[in-house]
Length: 83
Image (tube, rainbow, N blue to C red; front, side):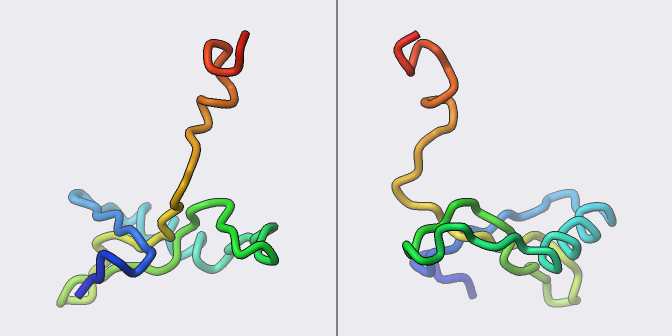
């Protein structure tokens, strides 16, 4: 059972493909080092673990929820950055 207060979000695949499963396996096996771990800060929402149904089939994944996030467009779009 998923706890909505766990600090994680679930991405559910409604049409899961073998490519999704393979990509998740690679991402989990090659998690990048968190550059801001000493600040207790999450820099990116990287795949944490695979979600499986009762038959053991991959149906999605968990990723950390990034609270107090900023949209990248706020830093890259001229109308937002004063340009």
